[in-house]
Image (cartoon, rainbow, N blue to C red):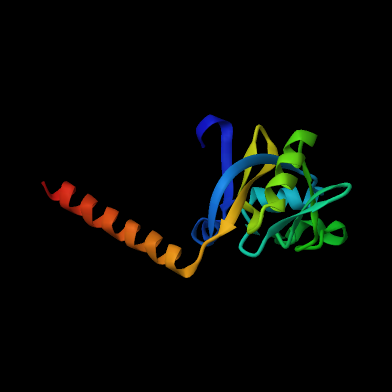
Length: 151
């Protein structure tokens, strides 16, 4: 909860599957029941991705569980949600995705100052060899930490 942020969910799979470069903070357009469900940390970004459209940017396949107490005014769990970004940020994203192999991936969902935010990043898909190298680096770092701790 550093600097007034409370992380709801992180997309750890994105760091494994993509080489992430530029990161952006975007606001979310949500209904009341969605905010209540997020406050109880009932969300998943596993299969989520971001689409650039002419009229804006949307977060697709982000799962926010229905809020039990909402009744009839409940929301659709996997509906597309509008992201709030500045024009300059949208242009950077558009230029980034025009490059071959880049996509926009949500990495973290959190509250900042009482408002729901999503961190998105430009990422290039890793190949299987890169994933193996990531695992090998992580294992060697763990082994080194164990040795240093034993001293």
